[in-house]
Image 1 (cartoon, rainbow, N blue to C red):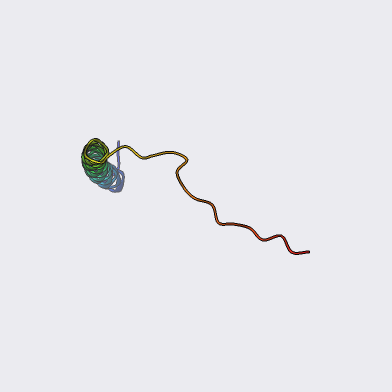
Image 2: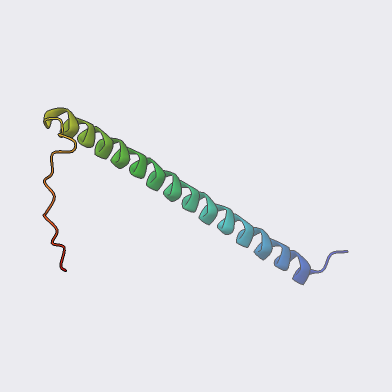
Length: 73
């Protein structure tokens, strides 16, 4: 026969397991929301950068003047 204390312990253990599963589910849900939010923000940032590049005139390469260097003797 199973003792009363053992059945009580088993019921407490099952309750704890259910609570842990619920907590893990909530954590996974939060992590999924955060990753979706991050992906959305990254897509928006990349789109803005692309639009900024399209609007700006092309950069000229090699047109900087260099400062004259003095050679001391």
